Image (cartoon, rainbow, N blue to C red; front, side):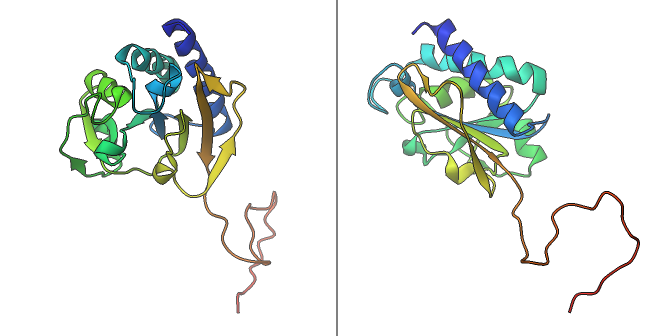
Length: 193
């Protein structure tokens, strides 16, 4: 698949995810990617910066419209640390860690993002509002609770399997719990025992 084809597919699925999760400006979108899987190779064996560039372009096309913070997951050699912009680190009060992702330790996608995001830095973890996983890299540890799967119309990018999720607040309580305000409040209060 051509780089333009990869970018177009990534843009499509990110737009679907943003719509499903009602993603807004300033929210975190975690992206896990195996560029090796995209080109039909085993994860972690044949990553390419050209493929990473195409994926990055697809994400950025959507970001221009929504202005979310993309957060790129590193590979296992950097313990799935994340590349993001310093403004996101500051907004969410995250703690920076010291490493520079390279293709063989961090992965091609993280290495590319580190060099192309504005004031890129690394953190150990985030609690993202939504996530996309291209190549079964397992992003769940970086999603807020509760994750809700989103089924993309495009199930593979190149040769890589695609999964996505949005998050929602936990529903707490029991049989007496209420999750939305009534259309018209009665003005009377009831007591809890």
